[in-house]
Image (cartoon, rainbow, N blue to C red):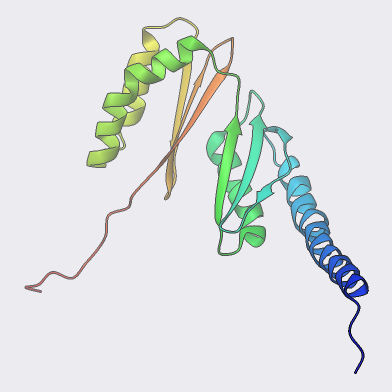
Length: 179
């Protein structure tokens, strides 16, 4: 019986592994990431979209918004476009923006009341709180929007914008024991 030569076997294994994993990486970039990037870049309100990062359990899409963007519309459009790519993975949408210290201070000032409104599910208090906090600062505009899954808060001034997405926890309907 002939003794197998190790060098040709090792070379064959290395070439096969490189072709397999290289093909997978090429597929992931060309067939999955690039179409998602192109689709996201065409959404109104997005100034720049980076290539998505596709991990085992999540797909992360990073976008930069322009001045007239509606955070709610952009977020829902990106979620709709990314649904096919993400599949069962969690879709993580990262909004990049140039923040300034005054916007962070405004958000810090409003955060306690916003957290209380989120916890007690009194979402109508959020626009009131943001308007009250913004009224004490010149040139600051706030926009609050809501859908069935999130509350969207945008704080703008001449220097930049701050975008906050707060996840809602809907009321759970159940069966009453005495019904």
